[in-house]
Length: 312
Ligand SMILES: [Zn+2]
Image (cartoon, rainbow, N blue to C red; front, side):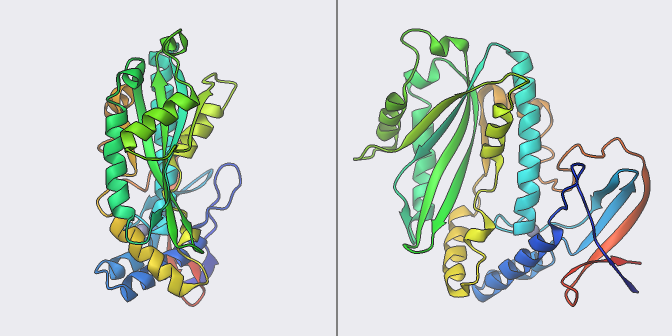
């Protein structure tokens, strides 16, 4: 029977984890999928319905549940962004230890926004252009590895989609020697050529300090691993508009990857056995990992209460 004990899951810094908000958004998203006749709609509505937590001395730790793994699912996206950020920090930490003299750069590549119906085509050709960019001698010569992600922001007024790419580059220290260094203008020209554009694209490149005292590397890791599309871009009060946006994004993102690794960072990703954990959205951080499990506790989504309620 239900006891009205509401789920309270807080992280070690005291922040309440947004289970309720994400589950509510997940249900709206699944309703949209149903209206749009996506077969997975029903499965998506079951995402994270029953949560089993391990009880530790330091609070709850997610132990078991079922996630739908749909790319735009607000629950799954939230878990994935935590997971990506945690894994990326591990990768960068290892990379930095392997080559302390290496330098990290943060590159953002943009282009004109996509009109409705064009997003999938543009994302595919953008990927090919990035591949071309990294074949260029000037780019390749000091490159040790990179991780990249594609982010999409939605302009609801013009109904356009702004696709852009964040790349965290790891380069040899020789990058800053004479004749090697690439200015923002150089990067812009290279991207223009690789992307075959007839206009000058906006590009941003900045050096990141990798020292322990400075957390700009962590901040950049977060920037790369954050949500691909924010759920407030497709779950709003404007249902009609949301449906158009969800339909476009679903078709554009089907079968694509959120994060891609290359070079040394790809090797480390493999070394740390992260390929095997790719679908694991349960263990997304190292919090409470070492705590003794006292007991387990189950919470179930209750639509009447609009929250997770303890199940016994
Ligand atoms: Zn999900």
